[in-house]
Image (cartoon, rainbow, N blue to C red; front, top):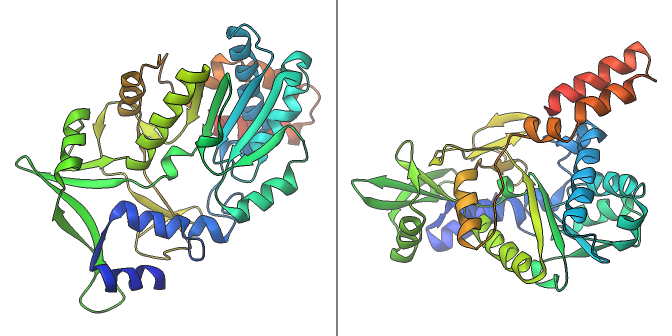
Length: 329
C-alpha cells in the first residue's frame, strides 16, 4: 500500500493496469512476490489442486497433440505461470507412462516470482525442467504452451466510453489521505486506435483491454509460427465477445473491495475469449474451438477414467473423489 501511495504522491494518478502490476508483482510489496496464494491456506484453489485427474487429462492431450505433430524427436512444453508446481509435477508423472514422448520432452516454466520459483523447485525434482523469466528464451520447437489461470491474472486497462469518447480509468489519492479512488482521464490516441482496430464492443460503458495478455498472445503466436506447436489455456472468462466490467479482488476465497488489502489480495479479471481467439487468428493461428473446462475434460474421458479409478476406493474415498470431480466439471 505504501508503495502505491508514494507513486501517487509523485505521479498524481496511474492507469489501472499499472496499479494492478504494482499490487501483484512489485518485488517487495506485490501479492504474488510475497506469498504462496494457492491451496486451502491461501486465497484460492486451482484445478490441479482439486484433483489429479485434471493434470492427467492435460497430459493425455499433450501426448495426443505430439502424435498429431507426427511424433517429433524433440517436444518442448512451456507452462505459463506454474503456481506451486503441482500441474507440472503431475504432468511429469503421467508422461512417464509414454516412453517415446517422455524421452523427447523438455519443460520450461515461465516464472518471474522468485518466492514461487523456490516452492516450485522444492516440489519438482526432474532434470527435464528448467525455468525462464520471459518467452525470448524459447528458441526451438515444436512447443506446446500451457496456461491454467495465467491470463486472468495479468494486468488490464479499463476504458470508459461515452458518446464515442474514450476515457481511461486511473487510480488516485482521495483528497490528501492514503485512501484511493478512481478517476477518468482522456485516453491516448494510440490506445483508442488499438481498441478500434480490435473492434471491441461492450455490454455497458466499460471496455476491458487486456494489454498484457495481448502482448503474450502475440509473442506466443510468433513462437508457434516459427517452431510449430500449439496453445491450451484455461481461465475464468466469457465467450459472447462483448467486454464487461469483471475486475475483482479475492482474499481468503472471498471477494472484496479492490482497494482493500493492496499487496495482500489477488486482483483478477475475466478473459474475453472471443477477443483472444480473434487476436490469435489475426496472428495466423488456427483456433480450433473455445470450450468450457467441463466440455474439454469430458471429451478427454475424465468420467470414464474416474469410474475406473473409483473401483478400488472405499465409500468415504469415493465421496471425496467424485465431489472433487464435480468441482472440476
